[in-house]
Amino acid sequence: MDQDIAIQGVGASPGIAFGRAFVVEDESMVITKRRVEPKKIRREVKRYLKAIDKTHRDLNATQNTVLKTLGKQHARLIEAHRLILQDPILIKDVPKIIEKDEVNAEFALSEVLSRVNAAFEALTDEFFRERRHDLFDVGRRVLGHLKKKSEKSPAAPKGASGKESYVIVARNLLPSDTLHLKERNISGFVTEMGSRQSHAAILAQSLGIPAVVGVPEILKKVSTGDEIIVDGYEGTVHLRPSVVTSKQFKEKQAKLNKEQEELLALAQSPAVTSDGLAVSILANIDTMDELSLIKKFGGSGVGLFRTELVLLESAGDLLSNPAKQADLYRRALETAKPDPVIIRLLDIGADKLLELGPDAIASTRGVLSKNPADSSAARTEEPLPMGLRGIRLSLRYPMILKNQLRAILMASPSGYPKILIPMVSAIEEVREVRWVLEEIKEEFKRDSVPFRQDIQLGIMIEVPSVAVRPDIFLAEVDFVSVGTNDLVQYALACDRTSAELAYLYQEYHPSILQLLANIAKTAHERKRWVGICGEMAGNSLALPILIGMGFDAISVNPHLIPKIKKQLRFLSLADSQRITEQALRLSSYEEVIELLKREIPLPQ
Image (cartoon, rainbow, N blue to C red):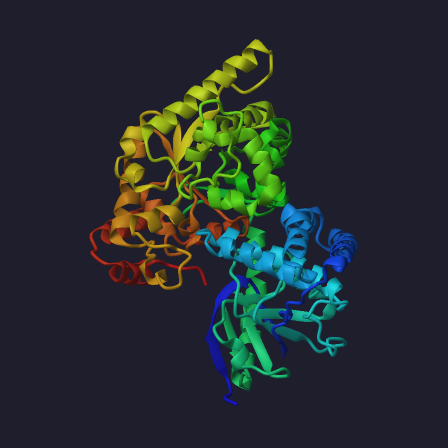
C-alpha cells in the first residue's frame, strides 16, 4: 500500500495523536422482517418492552461512569438518552407497528428509526441534524438486547492495552462509543461521517482525545495495524507516515504543548495593543460548565450566552419555567461579576424544536397554546413553519419571550446582564420586545420583585436588512453585536454547513468587510457599543481589521482569549487602521487574503 499519505478532513477535537489504526467495520445490524402469528403478538410486544427495560439499566450504569470521569454536564447526555428511551416514538409507535403489521420487534424498531432519520436529514442546522446519532445510539442498545448481542462499544480493540496506543477509524462513532475511548488506551479517532457539532466530537473535546471527522473514504485506504497520525488542529490524517513525517509531528506536538503553557500564563494579563489600546475580550458560552473558563482564560465577561443550548440539555423544561431559567442566569451573573453577561434570547426555530423531541415539543406547545392571539398554536399536530426562528418564534408565541425576560429580570440583581435579541430583521420586532420588557418591569414593580433598572437591550446584526441600515436600529437600542456566521451566509446566499458551497462562504469578501465597517462606524456615530461574536472574531487574520474598524469588543471561545491577547501585543492601532483602509479598497476575497497574510504580524 502507498506510504506517507495525507488526507484532509475536519478537525473535531484539537491535539495530535499517534498510534496504530484499529478499523471498526460498519456495525449496522441486518434486520430481517419476520411475520409474527396473531396469538404471539402480545409476547412480541412484551419482549420489546423488556429490551427497553434492559436498556434503561445500561444507561444507569453508563451515567455513573460518566459522572465520575466527565462530570454532570456530560452525564446529561445519558439523561437525554433516557428521555429518548421514554419517547412515545419508541414506547408507543413501535408496539403499534408490531400489532398492526404483525412483524417482529427488530423490524418495527428499524422502521421507526428510518422514519425519524428522514426527518432529521431534512433539518438545515448541522448541529441539530447531528443529534440524530443520539437516537441511533439508543436504538442500537435496544436492538442489541433484542438480538441478545453484547452492547460493548465497537471501539474496543482487543490489543488496546499496555503501552501501545490505537487510533479508531470508523464510518461513524456514536456518543456511547466515545465515552469508552479513554479507558481503552485509544489516543484518537477518525471517521468518514460526523461534524464538529456531533456529540462524539463534543465528548472527545472534553476527554482531550484528538479527532478528525468527515474524512472521505478513509476506510478504503487504511487497514488495522497501520501506523497513523491524527492532527485535530489542522483536520489532517497521515497514513503509514515516514520517519521524517513522524519526527515533524512529534516536534509540532512538543511545540504546541509549550505554546499552550505560555498562552495560559498570559491569560490574566491585560488585552492591549503594542501602542496601548485596551481591547475588551469576552467569552462565548454554550453550557453552564463553561462559566469557569471565563476567569481561567482571562475573559472580561460573557459576550454571548447562547441560552438555547442550555434549553436543549433540559429537554425543553425551561421554556415554561422562568424560576428555573433564573437560577441558571443567576449562576452566570455571579460567576462573571463584576463583568457583564450578554444573554441572547432564545434562538431556535421549528427544526430545532423538532430536535428537542416530543417531551420538549409538548412543553413548548403548552406554552404556545397559552397564546390567545393564535388559535393555531393549540393544534399540536400542525408542524411549525421552518422559517419561524429566533425572535420571530418568540414574538409569535409571547409566553416564550415573557418567561425568558421574567427570568433575566429575576436574576438581574446578582450581576450585570444585558439582553440580546437574535435574528432581528425589522425595527418593529425591537419595539415589540421593548414593550414586553417594560410591561414586565411594571409588573415587577407592582409586586415588589427586585430587579436592575439599568438592563440594556441590544440586537444581533446578522440579517442583511439590518446590516445595510444599522442607523435605523441603533436609534432604538443600547448596543449591537455582529453575528458574522449568519451574516456571511445570508449576505452571500450560501449555506455555511454545505461542503458544496464552502468555497462561497468568504468572511473576507469585500462586501462583508464594507458591511462590518459601516456597522462599526455608524454605531460610534450614535455613541453605541458595538461588539462582534461570530467565528470571524477568533481568526488571527481578522483581528487587525476588527481593531482597525473600531469594534469595542471581541467575543470568542474562551480557549482563544489568551491567543488573542498574545497577538494584540504585536499589533498597533495605527497599523490596524492602515491595513483596514487598504482591505476596504480591494475588490476580491483573494486580494484581501493576500494583503492580510503579507501585512499582519503573527506571533511566533
